[in-house]
Length: 469
Image 1 (spheres, helix red, strand yellow):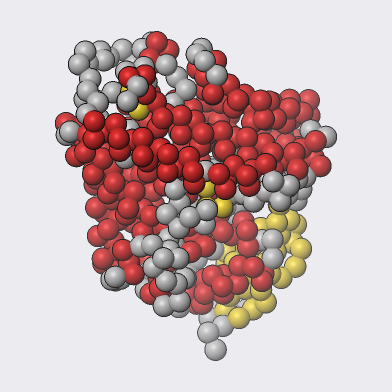
Image 2: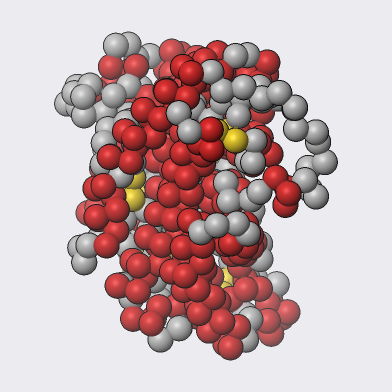
């Protein structure tokens, strides 16, 4: 096998990617531990046992097809978290390549099992992204081995699909991407603004125009540099890291942006990373024949499977955030092909007499106009995100929203833990309703006068008053 296929050139890049990916795995499992009971537990909004009765194993491969209980689900999640922390600490590097691969296989298998039964609450693009990167990480080798160039190339290919696919879907979508006005709205209407989003929204208009133009440059032009000779991949990767950092500062997109930053590290050479990571690269790195053959076979498999997502990307009917196999080995990405121009929020209220109503407050989504938007990413508030989608229409989210209302009327503690504030700590309210509000960011002058980040205007009822009876 040609010697150039295995090199020390990306030794430091591999180190950063593996440690960073293990940290993202840790966050993903921690999110699951904290939230699964209320969302998909046996008494949750979308119970896994019910889901498993009508979905076959080959449709959604998961170990939970063989056994499910909330305690078993929690055990699997904790094992995933513990193994991921061990990988963050570099414990797999002490093993031969096949031992390292087996350790990396564990969080991938466990997270796949969780995602494939997570239903709507695990339907986000960064779930598949984590699994796609995680599968390749199994074959990246350990600190004792040379780095397989083919795996590095495939990591860059994922980044290309992520960036270029998102750029294409924007140009094919909302007209505001073409007339450079989308960022006039996006910071205000994005799913979950963060503490800086108010400031970004109130930037001068010309900066918003530059943001959109820069987005097109970073997503449609820069990614091509990942496949050119050095130093162009390092330059392209650095630019992508910069653009993704801007998104980190301006919004709460779970671990999506951090995953993109990790993927961009695959374009950074040792010479570049030595300035940031001053460690010695071992003098005698190995690449056993079994390691070489396994890496090559897996790479060829992924390249063949990548045909469909690549064809989808260049298709006029481009899908976004879709997987092309039940193992999520190859996926397509893209977001915000259309940008919401107005922000509507659902405010859930409870009462015992239908005269005095008190609001439930969520951890991340806007509620109290005076509350500063919170920073949660890379942690993921799944229910808060779905509430943003629910504001688009009752019908498409009723399969979990109606159970949410029911659980609040029952004072279900696992569901209440997903919220920031429960106005009825002693006993569940007798009645619940959901109001529909238009939210807009305040101007600097309005915030100075009122201390509020949001103005809100009542639009009408989302759900009229209901009770358990």
